[in-house]
Amino acid sequence: MPKYPILASPLKLGSLTLKNRVLMASLTRNRGSPGGVPNDLMALYYKQRSTAGLILSEGTFIEEIGGEWINAPGIYSPAQIKGWKKVTSTVHEAGSLIFCQLWHIGRVAHPLHQAGRPNVAPSAIRAEGGKFRLLAGEPGYVTPVPIEDPQVYVETYRRAARLAKEAGFDGVEIHAANGYFPHQFIEANSNKRTDKWGGSIENRSRFVLEIVKASIAEWGDSKRVGIKLSPAGGYNDMGDDDHLAREEYSYLIQELDKLDIGYIQLSQGFPSPRANKLVVLDEFRPLIKNALVFNNTGLDAETAEKQLNGQGVQGGAIHGAVFGRLFISNPNLPELLQSDGPFKDSDYTTYYTVGENPVKGYTDY
Image 1 (cartoon, one colour):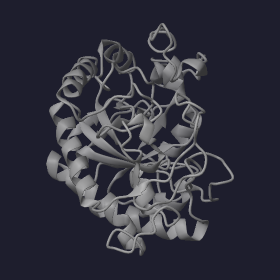
Image 2 (cartoon, helix red, strand yellow):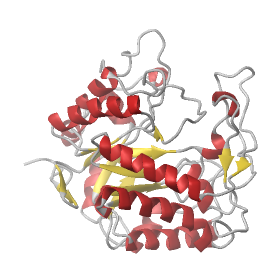
Image 3 (cartoon, helix red, strand yellow):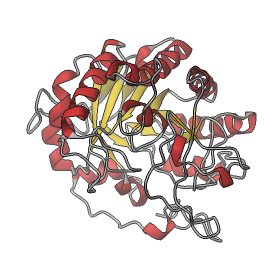
Image 4 (cartoon, helix red, strand yellow):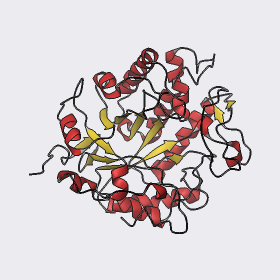
């Protein structure tokens, strides 16, 4: 019998069955080919980690975006779709499932990384900080241009969801955490709009709810859509105060749950002075009645097993445990968790920097 039997047990996600409850987090690795095209090396990387019950792909751009990681993959061109088909088929052959994390970074892009096109956001509010290491002088974030009609971007997400289905993914995850584009709509510190997309909590939640609805419509199955949220903020200059964040995310999470989506991934986020003090899982787990709950908060096997059993969690058990960095250097992580290691250390210097040998720190563990 496994040491941590719930962690090793299957999980139903709508019509899908995950072979275990060890989930691979979205991990930017910057190994795509020029043009954000997934390649054979990426297919091997994901195949090696198909020990996970569910793989959440690295953040995947829904349009050409000037992020710092210029080899991050996209899901908007025919070449990218062809490349992703190699990845998804390989994962399926290895016995796992994979969701595509739909990613737009909004105001934390840089115009010089996108041929001079301005970075966009709900409002013209610059995020503090940032460092674009590939640009002369390593500049920080710049003031974005407010979007005239957010519905245009709802349709961009809709197209990305459709293309992810075409590429063979098993579902999509909306990345609405970590200060990226959808997150910028949710919070009052980054959204000062006075139209139907801003102002009240209901209006500031509208963009996220609309892109989730659009994704559901493209897939024809609400369980094939998940979302990642980080209500405590702390990254990319995000984080409303405790009281306001509690109100914002209580409303949003309950509305998402009414849509009967597959799961809500809750991330505690990044400890920083910018973050609020909310304990995300305790605050919001009690509100989720229909969706599965995935926890992404620096877990180890023992803590994950306890939370899967409802111990130490307010309002009910979690359903899946999300692991990130451990998966980089331990492709057979579900097996290793059952013995509490030993775990190999990963080399941080190879997380995003390819150098002359893209294999190093990527597929050579």
